[in-house]
Amino acid sequence: MTHTLHLAIVGDRDDTITAHRAIPVALADAARTAGREITVDWVPTEEITSVARIAAFDGLWAAPGTPYRSLEGALLAIRHARSSGVPLLGTCGGFQHAVLEYARHVLGWTDAMHAESDPGVGRPVIAALDCALVEAHGLVDLAPGSRIAAACDALSTQATYRCRYGLNPAFRVALEGGALHVTGEDEAGDARAIELDGHPFFIATLWQPERAALAGERVPLAEAFVAAAAAHAATTR
Image 1 (cartoon, rainbow, N blue to C red):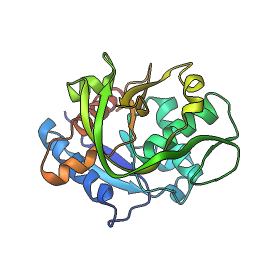
Image 2 (tube, rainbow, N blue to C red; image 1 turned 30 degrees about the vertical axis):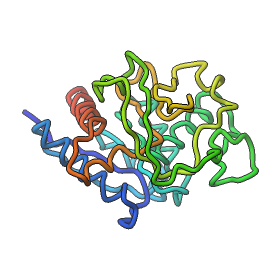
Image 3 (spheres, helix red, strand yellow; image 1 turned 180 degrees about the horizontal axis):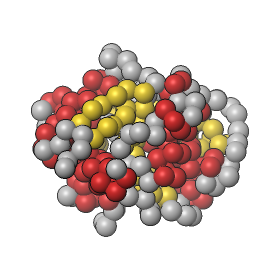
């Protein structure tokens, strides 16, 4: 029996944000390609005060649109996905907060901060980009053997961005000392995608691949995310 997959978009929905309109389309297209039935629920960050709010989902998509109304709610959702093996796809703000959650709860950097939410405070693991990537486009090289390269079936991909913050390069070496790895770099060698070793599916991109769905194009990462959610559901239901 094939179960309906229950997917959550973690973020504070705002339909004026292009990515927020795109994610449900990307998921619907991916489900149709896979021949799966899905439900998609938006979960506002301020509602995530305990794991109970998100425990029933087969996959979590940490969406753009920061600063989140509840930084702690977003981090709790990401921590749940990381520690329990629930598939996680983070894009843009989701990338930033996946890095922040790992820094705080795996590396033990309790003072790790996001410069957008807490400017001038603590350890700025997520910092303002030297050049803001607002409606910017560029090539991203993907690490051979990585999950993201397998999902895209390529060693490079075109990226569309709308962000002003990213991984602070001063902390990259320390962040990559364990299971977290940068698996996508732009042409300058800056981190643009990460994934977590030993996890079924924990991928985050600084760009917004979902936006391709609004142009009627495939979103391979959304397809891989749905496949991972299906695999997770098969082992937990």
